[in-house]
Image 1 (spheres, one colour):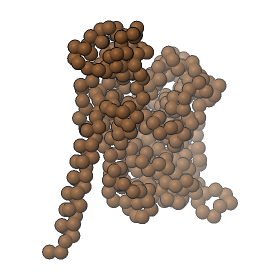
Image 2 (spheres, helix red, strand yellow; image 1 turned 60 degrees about the horizontal axis):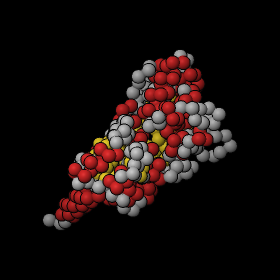
Image 3 (cartoon, rainbow, N blue to C red; image 1 turned 90 degrees about the vertical axis):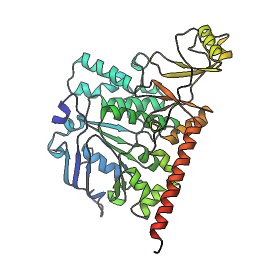
Image 4 (spheres, rainbow, N blue to C red; image 1 turned 180 degrees about the horizontal axis):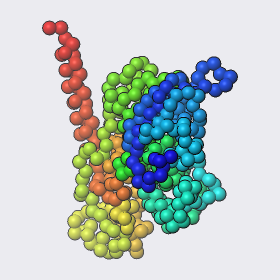
Length: 396
């Protein structure tokens, strides 16, 4: 498949044209006459109830499930005409609980597809290290670990790295973050959005969580029985105008509050007032800095300028190194995080939260007052829109 043979390929368009899947012995098809264009370089999220056919539809793209009829093209090429193994090696695939090979190390798991594609050993090793760095796992610490030695969030990062290792234009993700805790899930979502700003893959993402769909999707397909498309539009459009009562049920109560998931941390002003110190600086020097600027806390950054710890001045008196002084950060948010994520992180941290940039580097802090002011602005705008609608509907 030619789309898999280019080493640097951004996303390509996927088209499903009247695709149907029937299983023998059943009256109704599992997927009935499904047609959709997934734009190149965008994230399209399939959301719907369990059993509606969303995962079946997605798996027909890489032919883990063979369609009964219809046509699927990837980058203009007919996916049904290719050798199925070559097709799958050209499409990244990430699933819930990562699906890692338990007897392979992290490096071996990530290098599976490049190895199958015949890459030489050095190229595979270099790519594995690049991918680990990209998903925020230090190769020195994690390369030789086995999946059982990783947390759930770390396993999912390895799963994403493996899916991206051969630089496929298309990535399929089947509820990949559904089995981790809410904070880790939010961080993994942020990581995916950060990666997407760099890589611009075409991503089809399956979830049953509408909030996740709103956060991640450039477009959302709300699916009903047999993968019928109830609405296919941007998150903003679906929140503002659900197509019918079923879609409105997915949106749920508090649609206006869900607008917070459409606003990103990058959309608001960050503060730069936090005093920072490198992790290799001496505690005595940092203590002098704090005293000179009449500050109580310092934010310690690691060797890659990533936020690592908050340290109070009094904790520096007996500290011999900044590596273990103070307390590690409970939570950080990225420029890709939603304002809802930022609010949750502030509750966990008990105050202002550090914000990271595209490679995890420190970019500033976000404060509760900033988010509250944004919420108030949203309320005012909604009130103005409501008054305008009422005035337009009033009799002359």
